[in-house]
Amino acid sequence: METGEEVLRRVRDAVNAKEGWVKVDKIRKAKNQKVIMGCATEDERRKVKDRIDGAGGLLIAEDMKNKEPLLVMKDVLLLNSDEDVLKALRKQNGDILQYIANN
Image 1 (spheres, rainbow, N blue to C red):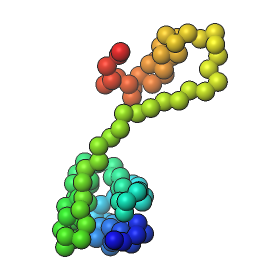
Image 2: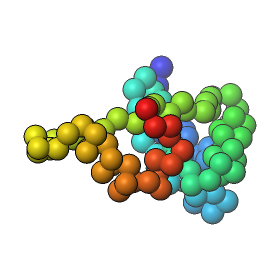
Image 3: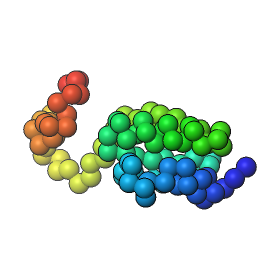
Image 4: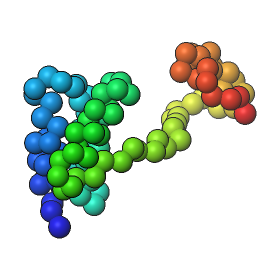
């Protein structure tokens, strides 16, 4: 059993993004000796996964399942109805909500 820091070091050594072959946007330690990495494109993600899988069996790369996004709204005025708030959210965020079905 290795610590999260040791696993992170192994991932950095295996990926070695300093060579410039791929751009890793984010990397962070998670629970249970896991490391979460983020890449800008699907192609970069695949390259990183292939590099980790080829690291001699010491590391295992898995695709991460995204959770449903959550939203917490604070200090919303009582004069706004739920429908008013939903309508405003849809209007202000139409570009990111266009693929989500209206419920």
